[in-house]
Amino acid sequence: MAAYRNARKMAECIPFGQPILVGHHSEGRDRRFRDRIHNTFGKSFSLQEKADYLTRKAASVGTGGISGDDPDAITKLQKELDAAVENQAMMKSANRIVRSTRPEDRKDALIAAGFAEKIAERILTPDCYGKIGHAAWAFQNGNANIHRIEERIEELRKLRARQSIEMMGKGYTYREDVAENRIMILF
Image (cartoon, rainbow, N blue to C red):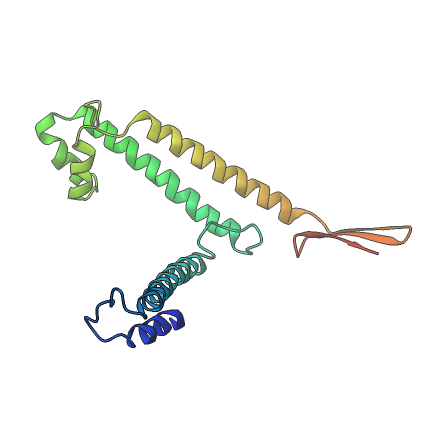
């Protein structure tokens, strides 16, 4: 913001519409001054873009996933697992309806099964291969995601069940602190 104000202040020195006086003794100095104004505006715009980027980056902190250090991590992962299992069941239900219902009754059957009208229309829209319903890769990705979440929950449960360890050596102490989820070597 300061660079922009500085550029504006510099630009206010030149009256609006004032041309460069070609051939005048001040031409070189005027051109250099106008270049400095232009460069200062450019610098202010790049600084504003950087500030916007850093603001977006700061706003995204904590939204990247579920940290293993979070005391509620297992509960959050269980909710995520439940949602993934429910999504998988809904996709199976939709495909079952699509394959077992007459084409003219599919939309009504999907809506009766609990799908919103827009989602039912999207399910019935053919993909690039002309197929309707959910593709096989969507089920494979869903199953892989469910498996990944289950493994992560199991891993966190094992980590939480561990006991803290402390071993003394010559001039050092090795400590595994389960509460802080870290290893410490004290000299």
